[in-house]
Image 1 (cartoon, helix red, strand yellow):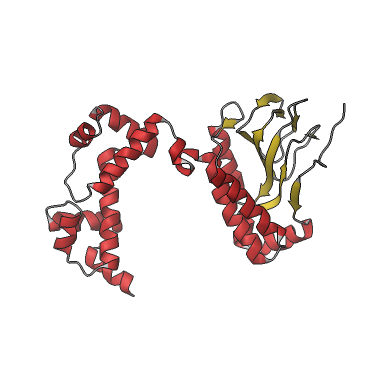
Image 2: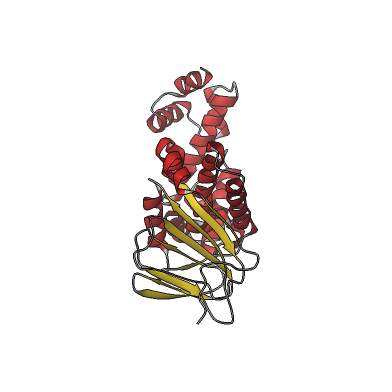
Length: 294
């Protein structure tokens, strides 16, 4: 059976030289935190196959957009289909490759860095049996292209830094696809997003959970459950976060008095607002405004 590491028609790849990696990563905290060591695209990669008994020194992300493949990670085998992705942690034994007459098309990257380990661990905990389905998104592919073309232009510090920062966003599109591609999320998350929009649009009102649930045509208990499950906060605490955010903007960008700001964010008592603000921000509204003017 034919097996190929690379050499596919239409393929593209950038491999950052080891000397550049060791020199730049060691001296630059941005790149040292998250560094893309190689990145590429293999379209319809017939006979593609890689086996690494001892893994690699970098983490590997592979995203399949067409065709099929298989991956064996630490003795567990997974079938890969279109719009599946998987991550192989560094130092992990693995084998992967395309499937027969339906070769996969993949976007891939090797990456390392001080922050990479914890991010990979977090994403791996979210995976469904070692892999995960994500909705196809042109925005994600555009992010990949940005990183690829930046590295293709050479290994200046600016190019490497920008690629590193963009790669955080690229990884985030896999870990939090419900945030990245919000139009394709599930119904529960749709309810939560509608609730957040409701809070934002009614920031001047004194909101209640019961009224919000009624207007959103959902029970208060179910809304509360879904909201805390998806955001980590109860709905009314989240409302206060938004009110605080808006108050900070008014203090920073307008000459509005405290009483006026209190009205604009739906709090009737300026004294209560001042106590609430100080409790959350660690200083009074007046002190916050004065600090931001300096």
